[in-house]
Amino acid sequence: MYDAFPTVQSLTDKQYAMGVTAAKGKLELLEFTPPPLGDDEVFVQVQYCGMCHSDLHTTDGDWGKAKAMPLVPGHEVVGTVKAVGSAVTEFKVGDVVGFGPQRDSCRTCEYCTAGDDNVCDKFTGLYDPKFGGYATT
Image (cartoon, rainbow, N blue to C red; front, side, top):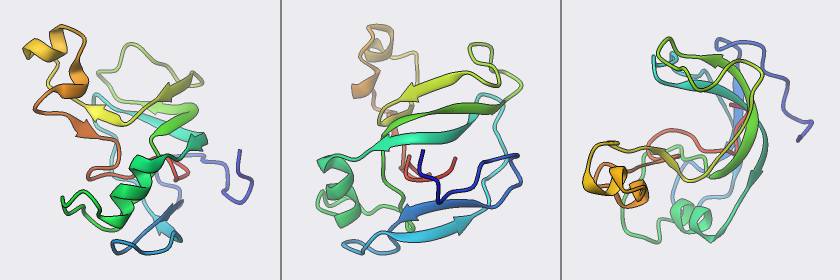
């Protein structure tokens, strides 16, 4: 774990991320307060995160789709669950989890039900519009 970031104690703790504030910008330390936890969401303290060419292309704006700024890349994430929403049944506090570039999908279309949720029309990327894995949470 990157020791420059403090250990996350609660959802109300000040959080930190490495992100860009403009396309092609340099990564810089950002401070933020996380939004309230949704009923179907988990709050994860990031311990490890990879970066690949997709992160670089996204932060540089190379794919033509404007992203909300600031943008925090990182989509190969491993961390520890610190809190779970009221509707979450698969995870509990203390679980170690890993996840990739996807935050959500519709879960009901032909692609999702076939296990191909990565091509769902309602695919939501990890850092589009929320923060990715280069953050404390």
